[in-house]
Amino acid sequence: MEAVKQMTNWDVEKIRKDFPVLSQTVNGQPLVYLDNGASSQVPQSVIDRTSKYLAEEHSNIHRGVHYLSQHATTAYEAAREKVKRFINAPDVKECIFVRGTTEGVNLVAFSYGRKFIGEGDEILVSQMEHHSNIIPWQMIAEEKGATIRVIPMNERGELIIDEYENMLNERTKMVAVTHVSNSLGTVNPVKEMIATAHKFGVPVCVDAAQSVPHFPVDVQDLDCDFFIFSGHKMFGPTGSGVMYGKRKWLDQMPPYQTGGGMIRTVSFEKTTFAPIPDKFEAGTPAIAAGIGLGAAIDYINAIDFEAAAAYEHELLEYATERLGDIPEVKIIGTAAEKASVLSFTIEGIHPHDIGTILDQQGIAIRAGHHCAQPVMEFYDVPATARASFAFYNTKEEVDKLADAVQKVIEVFA
Amino acid sequence: MSELSDLYQEVILEHNKNPRNFREIEDADQYADGKNPLCGDALRVYLKMDGEVVGDVAFKGSGCAISKASASMMTQAVKGKTKAEAEAIFGEFHAMVTGELDAETQENDLGKLKIFAGVLEFPARVKCASLSWHTLNAALKGEDVVSTE
Ligand SMILES: Cc1ncc(COP(=O)(O)O)c(C=O)c1O
Image (tube, rainbow over all chains, first blue to last red):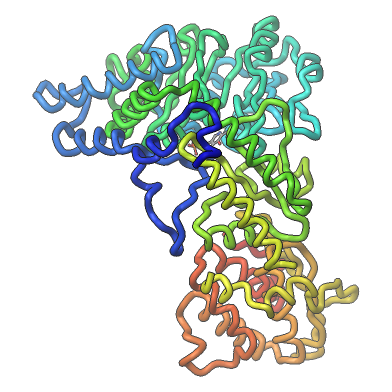
């Protein structure tokens, strides 16, 4: 405990009490949850808010004249307002609720792409993208006869910005880049990349799935055109997520899905669509999840998020040092700017075996390609083991991870 | 760690380190590729038939300890067996790792392969143990690609 107190002023034991999942044992050992990059845990306040909705307010939104429907609508729209303030969007209507990052990127790729991408055009994506920020662009490129070009990275897992700048030209119609890489932890200089793209009039779509849980963001400061994230990676429920887009694009973009709730008038000859955000929110949304996301934002606002980020960063550095001290361990992703993620391999031991043996000691990590096969290919590994931290993890847990990794090496010796 | 030692037993660790029949067969009659897209495990099983008998069988590829040890022990188990016998062992192995056959109490010809009954406790790893067997089965049938998905 002494050691933790020396770190940034952050009462991790108090914070841990907010997350009921963390107090259980797994395989007879206290759970050490280091798979936050896949899904983070949910504080009691989010559970309570979601339950309250289901117990007392559940109803369809935007359509009932009755008490419950109006109540549900108010709660859902209040969550949207929280999203707006959380990312500092200029207008709440620019915040579109989606199921998660994947749906958000598909929305942008297909809707923006149908309108603005044509034959011979180019879409830039980076070498370190999650599959969900590659495939939708590939699909629309194929449909339109456009080309995908890949922004390269160096051995440390940093994008090569000079090359990126040379790739931009008058045919470039979109830059799709991740804010923080889920497989490497690299924090990309998106603000500078956006400024450069804008010199060419090119919009930028930022995959923020791994950034919003780890540090404060501001879409106006970044000046990004699209900014997409998932609720379940930022202490909220699955099925919630946000696609923020600048109104100047959203107003021109056609609907992605169509159906109920997104129209102005419908006849068999012609349908006219509702203004944003409704235009992009066809059908009944995940209301409980959206309200839960609002509660997760309340939670983040209630803690000292800057202190949390600083603490988490110290944790990452400590973990990097502890694992780095083990000669058999190779850390994958050593960018100067990193957040949360520590990917590694052990010579001669498959990451899946590492994952299983750690699990037996109550330690949850991810083993696999992390939906980033081009990254695995770049480092010529089939997979990596990945520990990803949140502000409720502790230095003791990092020690347990390092000891358990040592044990894996012994088992296979 | 008791369950763990059930899975990562000495025998499995040893086969992982020194896999048997880990080579190509240049004049193979048949080979098949097995892939587990979830973890990137990929192996190729080579078969050389001697009439109805598996004259030689070998594998190449990369994977976790469980998939490698399983492939290694698979080659030992089916070499010299007839095609029908090999298929029967595949059937029993498959039944064991999916929980349909209790190798301790029900009659079977699995012998040393019983060690893989331990994967039942690790649902995420069943595919690792069975990948080489599905690949062998494909090769016996003259198919060339299998995927566990
Ligand atoms: C960087 C990044 N982008 C996109 C996604 C996809 O998010 P979701 O599965 O919530 O749609 C993930 C989640 O794994 C991610 O880490």
